[in-house]
Length: 349
Image (cartoon, rainbow, N blue to C red; front, side):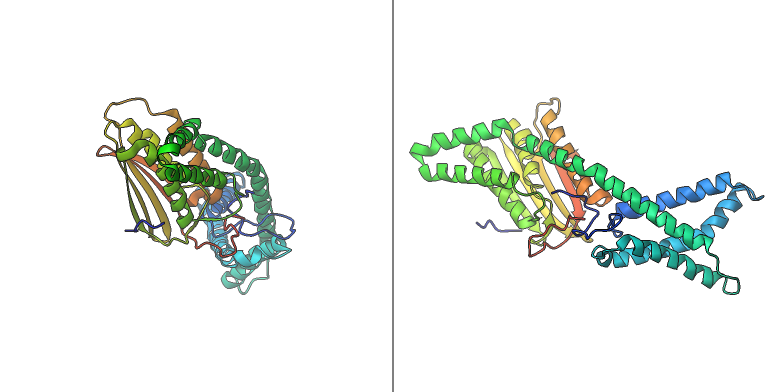
């Protein structure tokens, strides 16, 4: 347990890339691998359906899969292994097509060493590789504006007027009686807004996210007093890299839709741990005793976080919510990556 101490681009692309024909995806990303496999297998199925060579449907599908699947998996393995290197090459798209063609040639030679080399299959593999790169380039261009819109929507959901007004009122009430507390509230408020308006292309760390969440909770504790209790259970590397302002909105939801609605207040539990190469962030808060319709702002904030995670990590991250034993639980699961010491975001792809 931790002691209390005081541009946005598609996530599938790993580096600021040199000029190339097509943008190169991160072939180690689960979403990229699934899209490639589904696209190519769909093409195989269409080929088996519409090219009748005398066999029934099932033998046609199995026949095509027997020569396509091994080279497909071999290509994906090599591209995943070489993905960081490819992202720095000027002619990366040509190299991807060449690797795909080479894998088909190698498989063809291993399976049919006595036959003459066939040129149609390697050429088809190279063409399909370029078509898939073109698809990922179009997808990147299509989603890039959505990233900016998602960021604006997330900022609007986070910067709630009631929080700003309540914080300023708390500072005003403290100016005469406890000026040092009023100064603390205003400094924390300024730091929170500064973090919200910072360059989204810069990386954040778990340590920084915890610091921002503590600033927010320090402000709210001046307003809620003894009604607000917080426990921290941090069992993860503090240098874990993650998108900026990921934890503070969860804590804000826990206060606004949980503790604040409970007459006697309650406890917020914040946990962080690394399990199986995944960083798990969870926030739990008490549910109000009086049943009411879930607040629209809560859904908006969580939907914005889900969209940000999908845009940053594709299929490799998730946000889940659950209600159990009078508690509302929110959990974020995302890949663990150490922060770049230079401050470069690992989410530039």
